[in-house]
Length: 452
Ligand code: TYD
Ligand code: MG
Image (cartoon, helix red, strand yellow):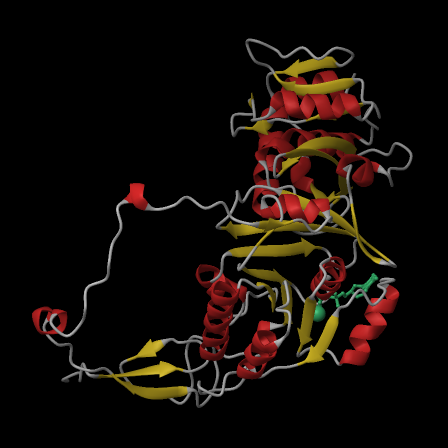
């Protein structure tokens, strides 16, 4: 069969490309979205070069160096994540699952920065007013409006006198441009509207915060596809049913991407959590078997969290393993190591593992505490309340050092723990007022810490 190279078929919803037409897109599953697009036969490079004027380039030394102009928001956790405040003329994408608190955070920002305009396609202005009342926001010159039409939005912002300092657009999924085909939310619309907003930010100097929904299955037309189009991408994460929210940077043209901000969702909106360890340990009850504390590094800050394991005899069939805030595969591996290297019969027990507070313990440093929690849960023996631990566990059962040892130990000390169980190394760190219990492998860990 001869394939005609000048014709391709692409999906207007997800941009997948095909050589043949089909009724249903194989990528996104939508019906009737595949359209024919013609490719122009490419001209020769030589022919093309004569039609265009060359651009002017400058020597690096001739360019005046300009520092990005930043505006502080007074929400310290937010400023830190951005690398020191909002940069003039930047486009920031604020992503997160529905209901996580994006509109709340945006409205709180809007209330702080004078001359802000908040345009929503998600809620009516009455709903925004209700939220503002809940957040205790007094007028503060904030302008709100309903809009979904991007050309209108741009006209509104451009024609304001004076120009707003900050514009919040809620959300990218509701925007549409009349210059682009397709309904709001499809990939072409989402891209075109984002590009237009980027242009607006760059030309007018207005800071634009664009809200985008991400769904659990990582929907196609979500923030993921926009990351390369904007200056910074922030994700508000957390568990809807827990109070804590973490603000992370996935991309930042004006700063680093490893800072995180911690917030707690209260009746009056998002509050900054200045001391995350204290917050995550605050609900800790009486000592129970299977519970222990570890120290994670979130961004550049150490955070203490509680790890809980519930270990119960398997009644029939295959033992169950369930996790919340921890990687299931990693748990399987750790269970395997504990069974084989320390001789604990976990293969006939169900295991449920939980990282308290809705935090995600993705670091290998959490391994050691998970081992302790599992062994303590299995043996039904409570661990001392005054210990915290961290370290990576290898397949041989060996316990390996992790990064930021001193930082973690200082945090453990600061939060009032007396003992730190850490990997055995040549030069053990010394922290005044904190006793260090070094361990070489999981067998020793179980014998010395759990069984003693
Ligand atoms: P919202 O900002 O609407 O989420 P998103 O824009 O990300 O979809 O916040 C939704 C949740 O936050 C909602 O379930 C109610 C809760 N909430 C509070 O707990 N306190 C508050 O002050 C506000 C405004 C919302
Ligand atoms: Mg919202």
